[in-house]
Image (tube, each protein chain N blue to C red):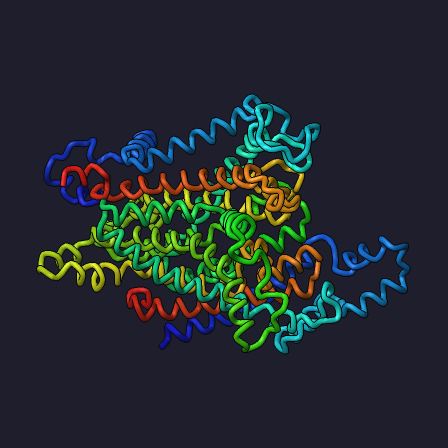
Length: 326
Length: 312
């Protein structure tokens, strides 16, 4: 209990630090949002001081000293008011985020879980059957596939299955004729559009889980208690799953927790190649258009979700491995 | 697990001095190299890696044309003069490919080394200390861990606007060391409970010596593995950032080649060589590092070396 309470205290402290970092990061960097907006306007002619002031008010650029801005920002964070997007003016940031979030959560979330379960099991198998083709095939295939740059795998799939053989759509999350909602036509179209991005993420992430599990499992297999269990004449399956894998899964579980937290951030590269309207694609759009309110909100959301996932993993670690509670 | 159990017996039984003396740095390096080389997969990886390193070093001599010359016919298919064709801007693809090896090898090596050094220093001390010290380090590492890599890289790259290779290395190291530190901490925590560490504590050794001389050698494979892993992700991150158009687009690298390929519709014109070659090079280089990691397994656990399998 004391362990959990200390972790909660740490979580709150880290949350505050992350939120503060998100406040100072844009202010440490050169350039300001108003300058970016004015640079776009000034292509049409000179910008007067009055126009500049008007733009600042319109964009809701915070005024006052740093402390006032910081307090205002904290208030915004607590009330989830992130202002209005510059790029998609006059849509509020919160609305843009809530439009993009479901696509990312379903696509990346499902694929992450599937990849973790399959990869970990394959890793156990590979370590247990060390030296046979059951080891060589998944580990070599996995390490080769995970060394593929995400976006290149995506580009190749898109080129062959989208452009050359025309099996799958080349961009977007659903057909032009569909209206998003709970109707069969939309869901079917959305499923077809999700295939290529999903396959890309699966191919590139599976290898990491296999290798991670295999490597820790191999060092666990060298431990005395495994030899002892084998000497006791336990069934190989019991030794592999109940003794060795149970201890070897801890590092992989840490990564899984963090990966789940990272789901919210989507997969910028894959979403960009396929023009998939998730969080990652939105972040890239915000960045290339210097849409500071959108960028800050997205970055904060991604950071906070990884933070929470990390906290849950820490608690879980304490339950699974009592030694860390000391 | 390696040398410490010998120490207590040293006072009573005469033991060969060479067994007690710590191996010199050269001995360690040659031993590491021969262990890695003895593994078939790792040997293939080493050969591929060396090939890329040689190409990177001698790039100006090997490239048939100036990689930034835009004087050739545009969007040409492969021919005798241009083995891999030309880009939409009229550059020779093969020359660009050779030049691009430099950036990737350099970024991978430097960023991998820097983030491993930080990960070892922080991960080991973090795993060894208990109490408020561990909490302070935990706090700092968590801060770096929670800020997700690619989004942070993208945001910083956006604020810095067209920063060069130095900026990319900086961002990769800032976002990359924390993973390694966390993995090394877990291992340190479990080694800390072993008898040889307890023995070292009772014999009055300083914590720094226990961590870096007693515990660290048991994690050689993790640390070397961490270097190759960090180098791989640095290479992939660098290519990814440049593919998104966030690096310096005038640099000739594999990432920018793919960036220009996508933006000049190489997908539609069917210029597969332009699309295929840079990505394949990134994948091959990254794979070679992953393959070397297979040989690294056997470093700290001799029972895992390939020869054991043959004897079995």
